[in-house]
Image (cartoon, rainbow, N blue to C red):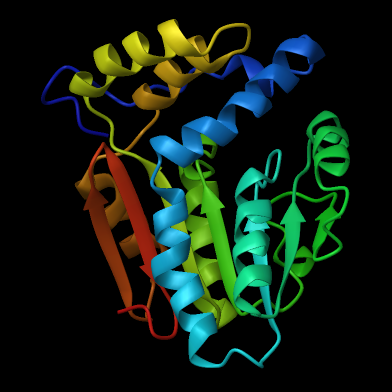
Length: 239
């Protein structure tokens, strides 16, 4: 990967991914992700643009969404809440392999029968459940190169509309992130893991290379949005 600017892509693991991560700090981090996703990742906006708008075109039709690496399911719950308010019919298969995170999500999802927690790896497309939509937020930067290519290939073959949200790797992202998280989000892994995540993020050329290696044939768009966000949007009606 590119080293031209002295900011190469990191391969360092994140603390929350380790089996020995203290569960109280892990759960605190999952609590904090809801605020991060609400204010900074623009993931809700992507779901609004590429999923909710499609649902509104046929509001009586039941649809299925697979949320890969769903974590604590804050985005799945937000999406279901929106569908409830608008009378849209959507069920979510939340794919999460970490049993600790599934325990957290199961408690948080009480009262959300529309969300089914599935114990599986995100790359196990048999666990997706024939979705109309596939969504993943901050999944790609946790994967190695071959796994990214494999995921893109499976998404292209799935026939589903997909939205993948991740991080622009930039040295300019680290300082403001550290300032915001250091002041407002204590007690979890957001600071140390977030800085690693930025270093594990992507440049445009890298994502285009993954798409090329995957042999993606369908319509796909790579969108950059403020602040430091990538969205890969593909499948039917991706424009």
